[in-house]
Length: 316
Image (tube, rainbow, N blue to C red; front, side, top):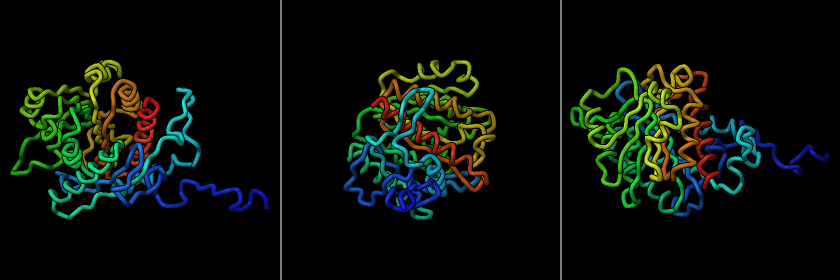
């Protein structure tokens, strides 16, 4: 019977078990968090201006993340000759912030509450959305945490001040962030083509300390040149909109914009900043899985986050 039963342990393949992020432990008690990084779902998409569906992003990314969770002790990368996310890195899944349908303020407050609990536990918050408005409560939660610089990887500037009284939709988060006294500046990368922000939004962004880099400019600069646009030594909050990527590889999003990044362009940028800056928070937003029957968009998102976490804790 040797090797044919539970005596040898569970194989625990990716399609077996409960789909927490990376098949990591689920922690229900947010007052008893002991971890290095915490995944928090923010399934809120009432801030969208066109196609909704990002409320299903956290669930889809969790399921996709099991693809990379075969139970090995870490993930060996032969190019880097490094093993990432070994057993010494404690990652937990806190489940989702509660969302109150049609109530943006209460839903955002619940997201901020979760991020504050993570920060109180001295762990790295990793918020999976949800539309990009969930970044607003994430940045709110960093009040009293010291100065931060924001790296935004996105197709759209998201710097609208107000439209018809709306100040907390998915076109507003970078404007709301720039208003915070503890946000020292923004580096906005991937911004391109016909955008949801008018010319005055770009003028306001630059006046308020933003450095805007398009995809074509980023390719001319190279990864090292883009990284030079980010203040050396700054404590960095990274917000990633999946529509930063070309919809040829990431169609599952509400506002796709052709001409976006490919995988390694963003991965190498994230690896570079992990070596150079202290990453204090992450969100990845706008995955709307129903627009991608292949599932590749959420696989891309999960793969990107797991690699980014590996880079961060390898340089920890």
